Amino acid sequence: MKKIIAILSFIVLCISMSSCGTPVQQTNNRIKIGVLVYDEGDTFLKGIINEMIADAKNRSKGDVDVTITVGDASGDQNTQNDQMEDMIANGCNVLAINLVDRTDPTSIINLAKKNNVPIVFFNRELVKHDLERWNQLYYVGAPAIRSGMMQGEEIADYVRSHPEADKNGDGKIQYVLLKGEQNHQDTIIRSEKAVSTAINYGVRLDKLAGEVANWSRAQAQNRMQQMINEYGDRIELVICNNDDMALGVIDDYRKMQIPVKDYPAIFGIDGTEEAVKDLKEGTLKGTVYNDAAAQADKIMQLAVALAQDEDVSNVVHSNSKSFYIDYQKLTRSNVEEFEQEHENK
Ligand code: GAL
Ligand code: CA
Image (cartoon, rainbow, N blue to C red):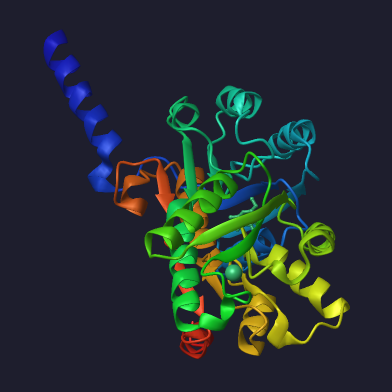
């Protein structure tokens, strides 16, 4: 008799747990996403944040409510760690984090584990080993190497079809490089790959100088002025790790009232709205589109699934913990087509 009761109660338990396929636990429809960024003034990141906010609005329908709170670390990792604690205390059930120092996520990861709050890191890539420290950590970004290759190809195409780019006719292209933050994966990889790709395509490059301008338009204008003071119109090509720095370079040539036809060939990366204007004016020769909307979309999909304790492999169709949205070349020859595609989105 005891045995029968035990078996029966076991069966009842099993039925109640599976309850004909409907989830036992009610899904959480109040999703509070804490977004932490290294610097809210960064143009490309502003784009990602705006897309995430729009996405959260779209998702908030009926009894579903998705809210986003943004914290700006102003370039200080300790500030970001404090902001994370506040966000958890305020009831955020998932975090999207753009690390200040991508090589130092230990406190952030420990805090997340301790409080059982999943994290989707984005844009500033942490090393694989750190991402493996907990199964609730993910990364969304873009493949740096592809942006460098594409920029290098654009440079090679341009130089080949514009022999006048070699202003002094010595068969080499004298260039300067403007770099983003020194330890950023995009700075390191783009700088190396853009140059090596252009060389592989047969461009003879001659480096005059390289300066760090930390992604910033104002800093780039400043550094460019120093390089112009030193090298003047020997500069035939300016390779920039992002568009804001390319715009800073253009600001400087504009300020000096140099005719556009005498500008060196200037190249950037990101495809920001401002940069697209300069592309059409011909002051910027090429950029590489860094798809903020697609990255924001992936971050949101992951964040919402994690907050609801869903199996994210359904969301991302892969076992990987890192997701990369590819870049796209953007020059004068495809800018109209690009704009049309984006209007239709
Ligand atoms: C890069 C982007 C830069 C800057 C940086 C910040 O991917 O091209 O413009 O936003 O991220 O981490
Ligand atoms: Ca030359």
